[in-house]
Amino acid sequence: MKLLHKVFSVLFFASLLFAGCTEPIVEVPVTLKLNKSLISAMPLGSEQQLTAVISPEDTDVIVTWTSDNEKVATVSSTGMVTAVSLGTAKITASAEESSAICEVTVVALKPEEISLNHNELILIKGDEATLSLQILPEGAV
Image (cartoon, rainbow, N blue to C red; front, side, top):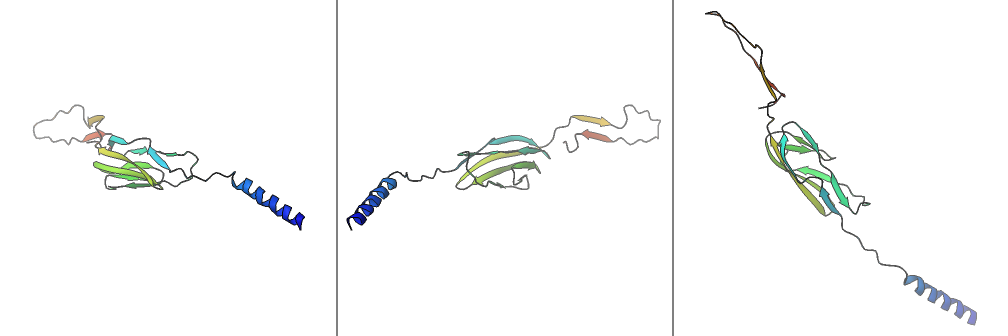
């Protein structure tokens, strides 16, 4: 009986020893930032990649992307922003309780080249000719 009592006592003190060695698990909140917080002059029809920077780095979370104005700018599930029409939109990346916003302003493309179908035109009274204008890049205003 004394032996059984000693065994239980040793087990009891050993369990107290191991119980005191564990530290409480503390969850670190996830924070999210974007590589850009502003795209001030995004040309119509162009694309730009936004990247979410999450910390702690080894956190395994899913980032969701949304646009508050998809008529102006859309965003893919990987953060690729596409300029759809002139105006402004806010692109939001969210992960768990954290989010970050990038403000996007879509602007018209500026012409890089303007040309006519004729460099020189000689007309005799009564003749007609049609001139056509080409603006590059396509979609420039």
